[in-house]
Image (cartoon, rainbow, N blue to C red; front, side, top):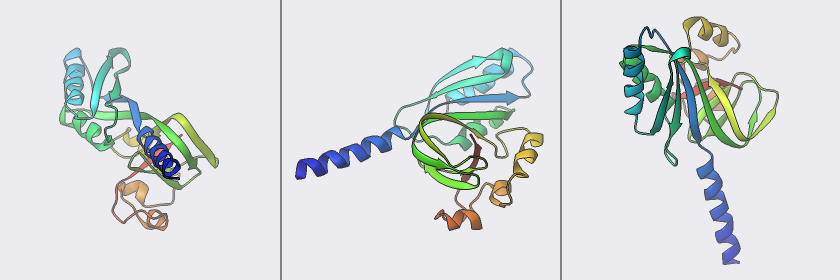
Length: 181
């Protein structure tokens, strides 16, 4: 019986460890030359959970690989780009999902991050999937305005948990990332 309990606990721990974000694609705006691109690359490489940064100059895009077993903080990536003097125009993160229900205006905790799905058809996310973060500082002002209008919840504007989030069990003023699939 003890072996069965041990194996069950081990399986739960293993599945929790796998529920993490492994990589991301970040598109920066305002880059005008190779020196600009290098400044953003250097800033992103200094973020503790980033393992590797590959630059795609043509698309002003950075392909990031995260260190395994580390918690990812999307805001730290956005801040690194801003500290380099630029802004994030697009941010997509790829992670391993373990039966996460994604319905319009639903919430889920994935890899320690609170996600608010702005779209979804009661889809069950399993395995490796890519999400797009549509919060301020993760896309252009024009694009943000478009996505902010898709939800009636104030948390979309503030990025902090409000009434809809607290109903889902998320503490008030907790960081909530708004995403689309």
